Image (cartoon, rainbow, N blue to C red; front, side):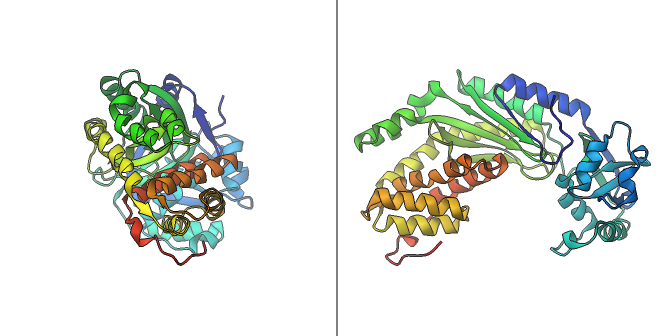
Length: 380
């Protein structure tokens, strides 16, 4: 039994069925509720507030653990239907959006002062809000206008994706799934399509003496979504089989906006599958792009992409030792950069951060590397 009231909660899934059942159950227990922004009322819920000790004022089913966890994190509660709900940290940005305020000073306020500011601003607006009530807390406070926020149920997206995968990539294999309160992700490999999608690329790798790498790599995809406003519903092309999945750039996405539906997401998947080969060809092309100063180029590109500094510096040092100051290709440097997520993984970095780093690294495939291949060194 998962303890899902904690803001720090996350879980992983070893099978598609397990992940689908989890999200079906979660949807059945979640509630989407519309109300006027001006009717929203926020109250302080830190350790010093009187509300923290009055569980009877909260909605039925709210546990003392959920109240205490909120008091130690965001420290706010919200009145919904004359009962309080703890507010999860995932709702903070969308709550500020409804109040049309922001800034770095707000988190520094006492919870009482922050609640007063929010309430004063919320009362000014009569538009609709769409609340997500999940796992004992308010998880999001979206705009109630369907042009601004469309609900795309996770289980519906998963079912649509699996159906498309089975049709286009028979024999696909579910690799792993992940979710926390703000983000959902899953990845699949397509072993039956390795020859179809990677034949030319792996042949070139073998010709350049990289037979081991050619044997390991396999086509795959990664799915990501969020119903708390963190991410659109999107699917990216991957190469799997190495230490960490490698994003190779091609991505389709459907924003939670403009009355979009699961059907819109399913239709867009055909675009990704059609472009998969183009993405692999783009990666293969990097085998032909030379770098005179690969270590300097790697350092500049890591800075450009804002890779986590400590892991990036370690990966750069490892590559510098292996490279020995010789010329190289962009492909070689791009593969050396894949040490960064692996280093983060060995340091037990949160999965949500890992996903963001891996996805961001794919931007390296579209850079003009000659602009970073300079003789002058640079500190990270």
